[in-house]
Every structure is written in structure tokens, then in C-alpha cells.
Image 1 (cartoon, rainbow, N blue to C red):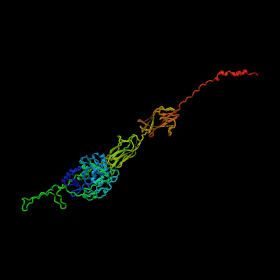
Image 2 (tube, rainbow, N blue to C red):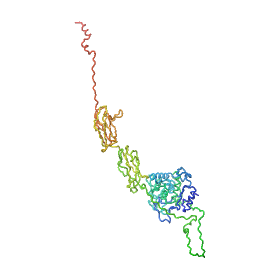
Image 3 (cartoon, helix red, strand yellow):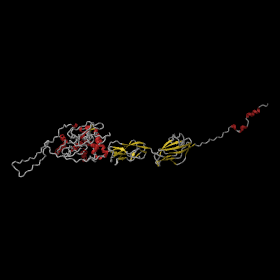
Image 4 (cartoon, rainbow, N blue to C red):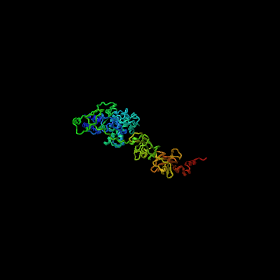
Length: 628
């Protein structure tokens, strides 16, 4: 019985009594928070009938009040009765399954819009509810790997026959109809609305209403328009009614919204459940519905028409009596008789048209373009002379104000925006331009990229290349004039200092190269003579230094050794940027000492006595020789 009542409620009961009975029966059957329609079903399906005097403007609703699927959720909810809501489930009723790409698109749109407009409180389940009644979740997830429907999803021509009359606005570009507009895609936007709210959410460079990612993002932004807070029931109702101005539509969407909040699960693309009941009484493929037509609910006793006592012909009243006021309009023979069991309905009143949604500035942007020209360069530790600047432009090239632009430092660098941040968000001014905060280089040399993007959009980024070079000094001068001299094998005892300036300003942090050369015109370091003191056994004749906070480099006493070859040499100091200075070095040979000659020691044969006295042998020989 509950299911039959649900079907009757789906078809839009036209009597307040019937609606009340249906709602009561559904509530007794523990239907999942069914939302009753307003007693007068204000708006109905917005079919244009004889009583309508004007066609509503096309931009009063996203879909042009096109037909939609009226099938309601099943009574078996994804979670057990009484369990908490918002429960994710892995499996469950088939109707709770949402195709993977479609579910991904809804969740991506929620995350994107919650980051850019958190006050809207957009839940993805609301997008799922709208997607269900508009296209049966993109025909059960019939999309390709990029999220685009396998074939276009088109509503009937809005030619005023049963629907609004909306003449063609896109030259048939989206709907293939050059006479009238049709609702297009899984979220059923009419072309004129898509022209304003269309998005490129999947980053393929196109705003395609047949792409579930693009359409879901656009639907979310549309629902959040006019500063709506969808956590408030009044704003939620207004948002849904701005999509299709029908109370039955509102109740159908909110029923699915509540159903999906109780839990859902992912199913493969192309396997979603396809609804069949549409508000224009046609089924899939525009075939006539196979379900039984609507039949009224029985009542306990049909209302009786009060009897009128006839007046006898021969009896004349004392005064002429007025004919009784009819209780119902005369029957039109061209129309079928009214079922006496159904109380007469109150003619639906036209709802107040919703205000035209305010288009967020970001939606108007067609592209962003760099304004800053020329290279972005600076030296380590300094602020770049120019800030990356972009302009946000609409499709006609006009500037768009109030757009949030996000600047991001990319690449391997220690450069930062003011405050040490790697990202910064700036709003475009009346000229449509936005400049990043001051950008300061770190100590790392090389190039990096600054990217500028529109917040909440996937438009191509504007990119800037920034380069960090070493600090420079165009002048290097010696401090002091003391002569530097040393002897071979010793060290220079004098201190050496030099000061670096750039354009007359002290230059701290500048790299200075020291080199021992034999002359001021030498093209390379000397191979002998003085050298820089280093590790034991080293004889380096080049070294590097960095100027301190005062732009000075200092070689302390003993930092230079004289070497072992006397001569005149130069210490050549060259700063990055070109400044240089020569310091003369004199190496003298160490003095040498002549060794002293020792006195010779006299021998026994060198004594005077030995020299003057004849030898005994000679004396004996002389005396003994015979005379002749």
C-alpha cells in the first residue's frame, strides 16, 4: 500500500486531502523522512496551459523547468531504521549505488566550493539528488574516462507545447536545436544558463555541459548563488526551486537528498539504476510509460450533493426565488467528467519568481594573462624589483574585478613571499589586475616559477620565470696601505683587508676570489712563491672569501705563507660583479751565515827540536864512516 501511495504522490496529487492522506500513510510506513509537498502544489510541473498569460524568462531557472524523473527513493533505506545518518556503506539497495565517475564529480565539486565558499555549506548529496531526478545519474553513469556522456543527454524542445517557450540562444551549439533551447547534459542546463555558469572542472580546456565534472561544478555554484547557506532549510528550498520552479520537483529532489545522506555506495560506470517515471509522462527513449495511469485514492464515503426540494407547478411562491448558486462550475462537455470521489482542487498559484542569481566574479573569467613583462631577476637575499602581475578578463576581453587570484611559488628555491609564505591570494581591482606580494630571494641560486590561477576555476595558469643570482660588487678597495713582506719559509705577519661596494653602497655577502699571481697582467695563478695556509701539506694559491655584513673580507696574520722562492708577487682579489684590487707581496731570501775555519793541531814532526837536531842515525853514520 505504501508503494502505491508513493507512486500516487510522485505523480503529484492535485488535492490537499489526497496529499494529506498520502503523507500520513507514508509516515506510518516509516518512509525515509518524506517531505510533503505544499498543500496547493504551487508551481506544479510548470506546464504552460490555457490559464497562463506569460512565459517565464529563460533565466529564472537552470533547466528552463524541463521535465524530470519523478521516481522516489525506495522505502528500504541504506541504513537500518533509527541508525545515525551520514553512514557510508559499501553495498546496499541498488538505488543507493552511484556510478564511480558521477560520485567523484559530486564530491570534487563539494570540495572545490567548500574551499572557495565555505559559508554555502554545499553537500555533495544535494548534487546527487538533482543528478538523480535530472538524468538518472548521467544515465546510470554512461560516461567515458574523461567524464563526458557517451551520447548527449537532451531534454525536449522548449517550444511552449507543455513547457516553457524558450527560443534558441546558442545557435544549436550545445543542444543541436537552432529553433528552441533544450536542457543539456547530466545536470540539464539550458544553453543560456550554461553560457553564464558553465565550468571547466576537469581541466580539458572546455566548458562542456555533457561532462559530469563540468556540470556538477556549475550546478554547485548555481545553488550557492546569492550568498545562500544550504544548511538553512529556507535557503535550501530556494536553491532547489531556482533549478526547477516546481514544488513537486523540490520534494522529489529533497527525498533523494535525504536518502543519499543515509548512505550510498559506488558502483561501476554504466551500471547505475535508471529511473523511468518522468514529469511529462514519458519514459526512457521518449517511449510512453508502461506504468498504470494515476488513479485517485478511495474515500470512505463520497460527498453527496445537497438535495433541492422541488416546487410544485401549481404552487406559486409568494415572491420569485433566485436560482441556487451552483456548487461547482458547469461541466464542459469537451472535458471528461470529474471523479466525485476527489475533492475539487484549488487552482495553483504562481510562485514568486526567484531573484536572478548573482554570478560570482570567478565564473565570468575566460582567461588570465600576465601583465608583468621582462625578466624577473635579483641577487640572493634581495627583493625582486617587479612583482608578478596578471589581469583577469572575460570572454570579450573586458577586465573582471573581485576575482581571487592565487600566486604559488613552484620549483626548488628558498624564495618566499612576504611573511615567508609560498602561496598568496590577491583579489583583482577595478582594472581586473592583481599583483603578488613582494617576492624576496633566498640564498639558493637558480631559476624557479611563480604560477597564478583563478581560485575555484581550472583555467590555464599564468606563469612567470624568476632567477636568483649571486650578490655583486662593482668596486673592491684595500683597507690600509701597510707593506706586506716576509722571508722565505716564513709567514706574512700583516693583516689584509678589502672592502666591497656596489654602486657606492657596501656590498655584504659578495663572493671574493683570492689568487697569487706573478704580475698584474698574469692570466693564471703562480706555480711557486706565496700560498694560502690550508691543510697540512697544501700549497693552494687560490681561495674564496665572502664579505661580511660591512662588506669586508679579512685575511688575518699568518693566513699567507711566503713560500721558498724570493721575489715580488701579488695577491689579486676579485669580487663577483667585477670589482678587483692587487696587494703587493715581497718575499726576501733568508740571510745565510759563513762557517768558521778551526786551528790545525800541530804534529810531533812539526816541533822545533825535532827539526834542528840531527837524527841519531845520521850522527852515527857520519862519525863511523871511514876517511878516505
